[in-house]
Length: 457
Image (cartoon, rainbow, N blue to C red):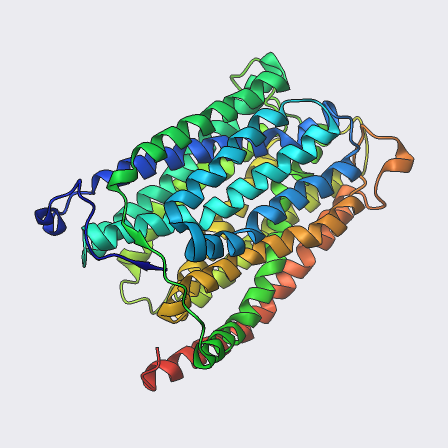
């Protein structure tokens, strides 16, 4: 898809030289804030909803959650294609927001049919919208603030903050709202947030980048370049899948473990925290760590000689494996006893350590996928990177039912592995991937250096 170079009528030509954010930014920022509040709020209570309201066992509930998350990360491949070829970014976002809103309302109906129908609508809406809203923002800055890369980078930083601040609020509030008023009302909260998001985003139409559709036929040379780029990134992307296998347990298996084996009492709080409420720590520490890492790395290593991208990714693997290892230690300590409870410090520490890994690996590889790709296929390569999260969830659809630590289900309906062995086995491939990455990362760095020296980067 190509963008017109003419600015929207709502902005004068003199605005191109401005260092202020265009008006469009605020519509996108608040719309995305409400949408992410909606999405992460719904996801925060989904795992417990299946086992408490719909009476799934832990073993049957897990594949449903992972299938939903898998769909959300595979569908960006389709979302970008639809926007490029037929509808443009704006109308794709608005069009798929309507079933997205419907999905939130339908999810509150306590029936299996409503559940699957709602999750299909939610996955379609979230997955298709995901690659387009950030792209539309980038195009808007390219048109209205051409050449002002600093301002555009600042916009994406605030955009990322809006996502995680929205997640912090909803992940902390929704479990409490659910405990006070029940699931039906709890799901109304993200539903109306999504309505607000759609209204705010649609209201900013005249401020966004003008779009023109071009049906570009891929040449043999472009197809060859696509495969060459994918092949260079293939080893890294393959290893990253194992990172997501362990990471994606944090709002499913970890929640069930917290419910059964963790003393959820917090000092200075009269009531125990909900088992799915702890996931807010992940988004909270993303908000804390992103500016902290940017400051520290910028001060200590401004020329990127120490904290190289490959070392950051390696550290990300290591932290993730350590986080799952902490859960494994807690699992071995309880040994399946209904009376033994471990300290809340175990999952709290695990969530924080896991977030260190996420920020180091996800942020670094998202940028690497973008910079390593030729200009004509940056969106495609980025979508391929997001698809690694989908593959991690696909593996979890098969692996997660092996978890057998649930104390709320009959023994014959539990998986064969107790929490300690389950989490330990999950951690092992992540740490193995970290070791393999030492060699894969060095090979990739050499290839990048050779490409740069040849003038092909």
